[in-house]
Image (cartoon, rainbow, N blue to C red; front, top):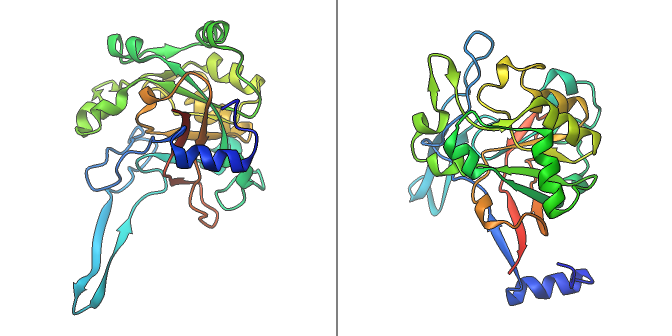
Length: 257
């Protein structure tokens, strides 16, 4: 987007298709896979429910609308610092107090899809991030960092998506030193933890370290395969929930066509 000199140029680029909008959001509904924590430490998020209020009938002749039952951390969602004990004391750590400037930022997309396909417990390390930077350029302060795993291809099957056995879930994610490296670089946020993160030191390092640094998490993004390694702008705005610890989002990414 180096040729975009002003907001007017940006608007024209959107209108003419020089910038494409990629939807990185999974459909939210009763069949949406919900992330689970070990039952000994957490209750599950209840399944999503969609209930009709009216649909062009006696209870509302001209309109259709529904009411929803949905957890803050359902589907493609935003994690605010107050989501984790390490971020509970930040005055700007809930979805209604975060500065809106922080919902829009450049995105770095690290492609780990091949590794994730070969090993569902694959962990991206700090050395892996540094190798990516050597090829694509340094990750800057205040930027999003996204790990592409193509795990979203499993969205249609909750059991396949969670990929759990008697030892727990098995899904790819970051190592603790990966997240610490990104925190040292003062990035804006990252995706979510690996399935085996509960056994790491510290437990759930993405959540633990991100929120300890007043940074943000994103979970269950889709279509990262359509994004370049660098050069895209991510818009990830949570609902302005009073004292909200997170929120489902519509994650949109601006990509040069």
